[in-house]
Length: 445
View 1 (tube, rainbow, N blue to C red):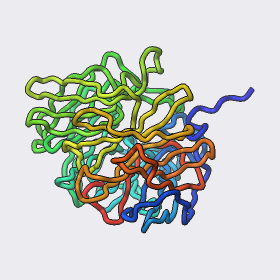
View 2 (cartoon, rainbow, N blue to C red):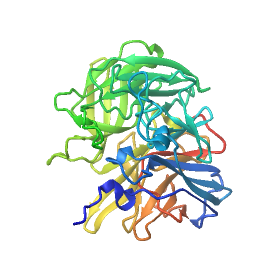
View 3 (cartoon, helix red, strand yellow):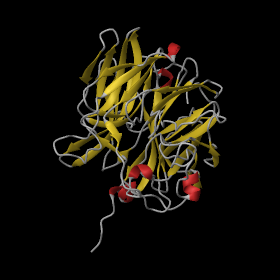
């Protein structure tokens, strides 16, 4: 009797077997000449083809270099973490080794450093050629794990992030200045270790999400996620003023839900914050019947004077991996781009959908044909005007050829055919997050 493989080891979730560098890739269409740099995207790729959960696989970064209208090269490299090279995690001062982790979730640039991130451990610094430099702890100042979703302030260049832990203090807020120096560390009191994957930032505030997916120990080696849905835990958001980083965190209740990813937030007034999220009704609850587990776009308006949060669903299509023009992070961004899915008579279709965040309306969608599946689409600006024209870049899997392409779309003409499609000779497994890393860095990472 043949035992079926778990989903994360089958199809395009399955890891690729090795590392590759290839040059002068074929292109359909025309790569914009303005694009000079790397598109890098991170994701799980267990090097021993094992592991008990998709989230646990060793990080592999896939990169395509573009320059002068050419697809110069593709390469993929594992992040050589201590887990990758030495296996089992060792004990540290707090009972955990923060260099041990898969570094499989995101890749960002700040203060000239490229960092591969996972929320359970330290970042790992890599080079533009995807070689691993080593774990990075901000010169010894960082003593917690680091979220995979830091936020770069487009005004100050500061990097805002947090670390959550299985041990108290469960949540710690950090801030690094534009030069990359860690200048603020502040523990925040929360009642339990919750699975806090993302947060948000405005010009005046930082917003934390304390939601009812709570630490729940599992047998060692089981491969199960050690966090479970908890009906008794109150879902809430926490608001901290940036100019009073050691001051009070205001906690406001929201309806039970889970959020992997925020879209953006901004200050509508001194005491009112607008926050966009991809909201699940439930997660990590054994996929109980009757509880849809697709995320949809919601707007939460936080009223600090009233002590309340108004929650409004903006769309009913399933979506994930939201991105904006990062130069509008914490400001009233006009547009967001979400990787969405819809189910029709001929099966499930993937798309990249553009939303007007001011109205909540859909203002464009690129529907992929023949079962092709897009990943996250990073926004690449075309000029110096934030929220202006630009391109969206995404790896797209083609099940017919069992290969992947790097697809470049005009963000303002999503209904049109791709501007360019870079044909890769290999498959890029489904993964998580990445960024366009231009040769000429901007303020944001």
